Image (tube, rainbow, N blue to C red; front, side):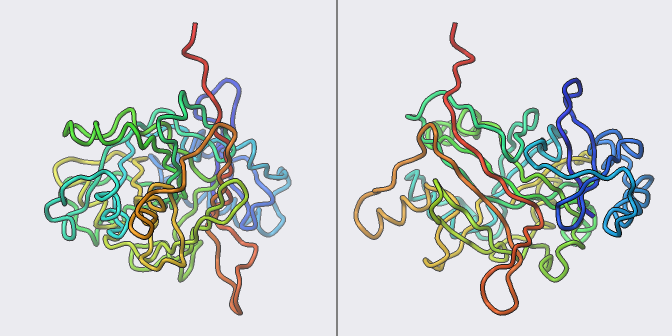
Amino acid sequence: MKLATLKHPRHRDGRLVVVSRDLRRAVAADDIAPTLLDAIETWSACHQALQQRYAALNSDQAPEAFDFDPRQAAAPLPRSPQWCDGSAFLHHGRLMERAFNTPPIPEFDTVPVMYQGASDDFLGPHDAVPLPDEAHGIDFEGEFGVVLDSVPMGVTPAAALDRIRLLVQINDWSLRALGPREMRSGFGFLQAKPSTAFAPVAITPDELGDAWRDGRVQLRLHVDWNGQWFGHAHGGAMNFHFGELVAHAARTRRLSAGTVIGSGTVSNAEREAGSSCIAERRVLEMLDQGEARTGFMRFGDTVRMEARFEGTEGGADAQAPFGVIEQRVVRDGSGQA
């Protein structure tokens, strides 16, 4: 099943719609649950009705269906009770230690690393990204994530996988120049992590078929910066699977329905896979060439991210299960008098 949220001029949490498998058509579902958060919070009661509407839409038996325009989509959850982001790709984590010149994190290979971000203002897939200053080191970070039902404290990794209701694709924006100080403070990220963006469609795990396996999204995440290829790292390289990330977050507290857990930047050790963020490429340049040569983003720059099913005989087919994130960075002047 595929679900999305259309923007609404009067309602901050938008309007829930069911989206067809090919992402071309949609039908309203706000009579079943007004918003996606309502649907997640009442999943056992509304899941079957949503699934039936999805089946009707895909068989051209939804008379109220309309063309789905991802540019009218908000983030699937425009806001959520909680957003926690891991660093489950250890190759990326080790490179970031070099980027920030920080000492190795104890037990990094055995205990997940995670920070708690802001969840009150998620960005839609085609929203402009307003930021105050290019000097802050504007960077994109391509990720996958999960949306949870309620999770009990102390859940096991295996049981945690059963609490995953939806999968999402994420661009976790970062301001790299602000990160080192916040990391040294010991209190974690705040200013270095502006609003996170999401692809238009959240999907149930069964939509991926064999590409949802071992608690991981087994797809390549294709990233283009200003129309140029940047990377296509594979999500299956996660060192910790999503059940382990959820269990880590729930070790000492319950998690509310609608909590979103991110994988951290998708990263592969193979150089030919490229990167899913600029900071990683800069570290590789420092290792190879003695200095970073790639700058961070400028106002007016665009980034495009799309996870794809791979074709059976080479190349990628046109099917992108989450849809596309395509955003432009703009100067924010709202704080000026």
